[in-house]
Amino acid sequence: MFKNLDKKSIVQSRNGGLVKDVIMYARLIWSLVLDKRVNFFLKLLPVAALVYLVSPIDLFPGMVIPIIGALDDAAVIWIGSALFLDLCPETVVDEHMRALRKDSARSWQDAPDDADIVDGEARDVTSEQTK
Image 1 (cartoon, rainbow, N blue to C red):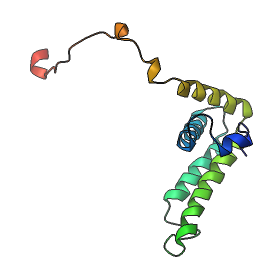
Image 2: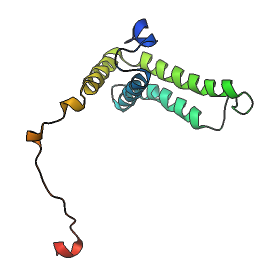
Image 3: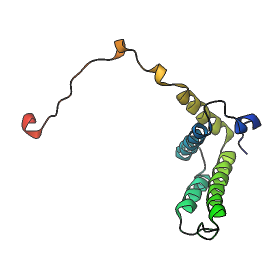
Image 4: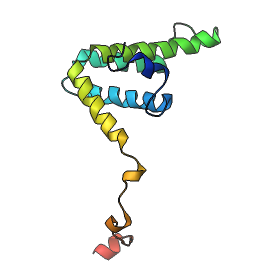
């Protein structure tokens, strides 16, 4: 379903684990929703999946069938996001994916050295002092 993934990356993540991948794809979907090159009606897919998630209407209520009740919510989110990513223009998805990977490649080790930090003081300015 995902164009940019190979089978090995689905089973074992190369870049930090399942949680990091889920966050990366959530950011990808968000950036695609904000992109003007993606069709408006296509943007309704992830929105509709989220609306279904918070909606009180449920195909399989969690109270009646506890395990399947949670799985249908997860399935709707997964299908909605996968379908959205598949239907988005491939060049736009690749562009956003490269930008996100570049962003996530930075780490705390890229923080500025002590020589780049300027010492300063903070103080509160009240309305009486500004008059």
